[in-house]
Amino acid sequence: MKIHQNPRHWATKKAMTTPGLGSVVNYGLVKLHTRIFLGKADEARAEERRDHLDGFFDATMDTYVAALDEGFSEAEAREITHIQANFDFYNHGWTEMMEFPSDELDAHYERYEDFFERYDVSIDDPLGAFRSGEVPEAPSTPEMLEDPEHPHAEGGFADDVYVEDEEGNLRVGGGEEPEDVDVNRAVGVDDGDADAE
Image 1: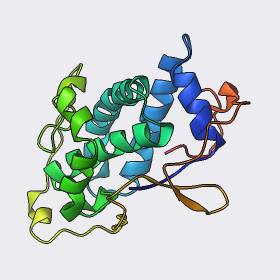
Image 2 (image 1 turned 120 degrees about the horizontal axis):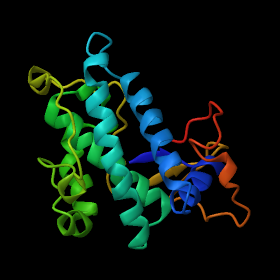
Image 3 (image 1 turned 180 degrees about the vertical axis):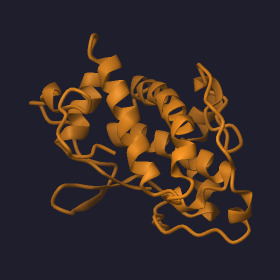
């Protein structure tokens, strides 16, 4: 998958694993991701998906921390949560929200298969053991799976995590964590409008 990485991502990672900041950042990340993906949804369907996305993204924050604890890089841990979201979008027929084409679902799963299996995550059950609370249901659009449209998807990045930096450079695996990370720039701590998706 192709994702972005900038100083705000590093700040958010550090804040997520700092006692006393994690819950504030968690809330900010959930709201940020819900807003971003509702912006990709069919406008007539967006609002009915809000509560589901809030609950789903809240659960994926535990995935992110678990992946970091297991030694995955910041980019990989974040990619894992985005893969979970794309499984969920696919299962609901929300193909217009997907970040990679549906024919790459298996390839993305297989790259992190060991991790996913440890936590009972599958394409059919994107949260697995990370489903710690109730995730509100939302209406599906299964008819979209018959001839899926992926206006926000970028294919061809299923073999690794590809990270685009602030200068537009694309590299496999992402950058090294800077030494001078400022947690005050983290999502939920800093209310700036820069995205940390």
